[in-house]
Length: 576
Image (cartoon, rainbow, N blue to C red):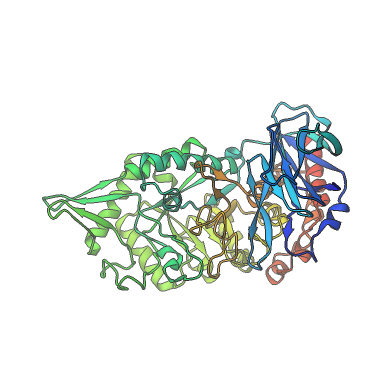
């Protein structure tokens, strides 16, 4: 059996089916060694890519493997590094164009491939906080065997890692406000468990751990029913997806006509997130700029209220569920929520959040009403209309403009930032633009650029609308309506309740580490190093030109070597 293999950077993305772009000749051209850099309390990663001219099984463990196809030969990877190293098979997922692209980090031991089939493996080292500065060498040994024959060493991939003395903070303390919206109702559906049950929370713990490890700082709370109208999933016929999110607050109308509000589910989720460092902000959705439901009768449950809020209520007298139907009832609900957050000393972290309001007057009317009812709430808005920046600059505490609005209204944002330094400024991308983004078809260096752009544009962080907003069968097909593949989330559901993380998430986290380096270098006045670093990876540094240019190769480097030098330049300067 002829085995072909090579080393690729973390940002490499294997493509199946597009042989014009990637085939075994590309693997033949890959080097057999790679250079990496890291700080302390950091990770270093690369990929090992392999193919063979016969049927083969690739084993990443020491366990035995006999294929059901007796013709299949075995290849085994064994890692030998001075730091803990974990190997993942990289799962392939169908993309918009019908080709398959690498993304999910799979923990199973063995992957079988056809003759000339290409596999990639993610090799990730964890560098401890007490690691000594220096150059370390390691390798992946490649063994071949068949049946009961002894293994034979057939090749090695070498890695040289330079560890710098700079120590990264824990992600929860990294100063980057990462807001990835959570969809816990979708998680309950995927695992077929009762919503808000103990089993649901057991599974949610795994996802909160994943979110915390990524450095997410914000809790997503639903305070009404289906605030996003399920992303109109009821209209999608080709690719099925149930995207309805449900309220975390239950309401009961007592026999005497009074209302009782139960916040235990909401608080349980807030407390669970806090266990993993997700505690800077509590974003409450469903009280302002609720997306209208044109289906299901097309009427608002409370017609005299300025927003389409749907609050489900259980009536003790009749024993049936219904909805609050008057503005007075909704006002009481909102006042009670404000009181709860005040009495539990959480109000300073709470933001009443709106997602992409499109009508200035409607949003103003809704905002003014809720302010009159609950005057101590603060507000957060994802803005995709540039005119909203100036219109609501003084009302919104947490700004999150869409990337093009950030570009076009940049001077206004910086003026608000100077005048109101206590406010938080993020930027976001969603189902567009094409660049930078985290679609399955995106380049993985877009994740690096996301953090670098945040530092360059003086933003406090980054917002993305989805973490687990899956289709009905996310592990087999992520295609859905007009949304680009990958737009709906960063992780996949494992059968045992864990989150299967992705290359896209890993490179976003790497980009946030680049943000940390840039901010620390700026703090220490290392202008020369900062300028050199930006020059390596940002090919365009005029905001006005960024706004007009969405060509990846004209705004960012696509070279892994440039990002390695970028990190080395900053960490070297920070050591002195």
